[in-house]
Length: 269
Image (cartoon, rainbow, N blue to C red; front, side, top):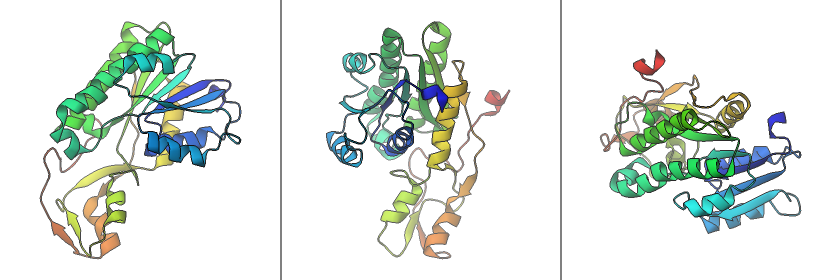
């Protein structure tokens, strides 16, 4: 995409499922000036660096840091044009049990991204959100709703140099902790299903990347972009892999909905 030509792009949470796939697509564009992977996991960065050797990808940089650390972000954002904010604590049960930690990463971390972007005059910032931010029932969704509000309202407050936008979509198929990931790792003859009525929105990783690219190309600042994507019945997915009725019903976990939403009725107006 021409919009990336001669630009420096930084990805927070760059060693995650989305980050690795997105960076794999970016490195194909030889006109990009620099790509920075920003994350706190030293091991994942080391493993990722082996897949992207420096002699083949000289414009790739690895930057250890945490979105909770504003001073580190200020340094990392120096001379950066575009930022994709993908770093988050996202496992629903973990976030329910560790709410203060989720606030530090998902909410205060988002504010730090905004402040560092303003100070460094970053041109465009796109944050990844989730359908769980729509009428949130669990704490993870509530933190992502706060992120959305911060980003949307930041464009209204100070939009002279930096535009902020959000993409909101469902579960990325095959990402860590997703239903397909759990099915792949399950070694028992039966699968533990929470409820036979359970449905979830699913999006392929390529579609999520395309959506971020589209946002960078078209954002004006202050938008929440929401795709039209299919909702899958989890029972059908489990039966595809395990056979008909070959599952245990364990009941809905804390913070779970039977059906997620991508947009509320009030938002649709």
